[in-house]
Structure formats: structure tokens, C-alpha cells
Amino acid sequence: QVRLVESGGGLMQPGGSLRLSCAASGNILSIDAMGWYRQAPGKQRELVAIIFSNGDTNYGDSVKGRFTISRDNAKSTVYLQMNSLKPEDTAVYYCNADRVRGSGRWYFDSWGQGTQVSVSS
Image (cartoon, rainbow, N blue to C red; front, side):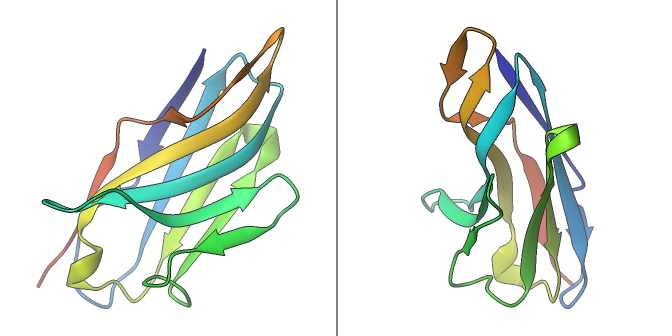
């Protein structure tokens, strides 16, 4: 089994910064894709950023130039540095790990419990 635990959410003023972390644990030998998604009230869950094992990244249009995703493979941890935060960034942020190679099996599309990010003055 793969467990994802997010941390770092909270309340921030517009223009401020926050850093989210997500640590994966369990039966893990390697992880292909790790990413962040978010869901605001009344809206569908959307991609924020994703990073692959080869270092390639992809960002949602609304966060390009403001957010940076990175990962530490040795720690099975993914980070999201969020700068120049806007009120519209307010959402629950979910960590995702996909195509996780474990001992004897693969795991697909694992999710964390989510962490709240609120941006307001």
C-alpha cells in the first residue's frame, strides 16, 4: 500500500508564499509521477503541477510562473512552492502518486487526504 501525507497548508495573504510537502510511504521502490491537484468549493479537481521521474514537469495554466514543483526521490517526497498567491488559489490541495513500483506489484493513482490553502486579506 502507498500512503501520502501532505503538510504546509494554511492561511496566507495575497502576494504571499507557502510551501507544501507530500511524503509517500509504504511499499515503494520507485515513483514515476508525483503531482499536486486542487479543488475549490463547487469546482472540479484540477491539475496544479506534476513532476515525472525523469524531471519533466507540467503546470496548470493558472499557476505557471508562480508555482514550482520539485521532488526528492530519496525521501519519496514532492514539494510545491507557491509564490504570489492569489485569492483564487484558495482550495484543498491534494497530493497524487501514480505508477508506483512496489515489491511484487504496482500501485496506480494514489491520493493524500488533502491540505487546505486559503488566500485572503
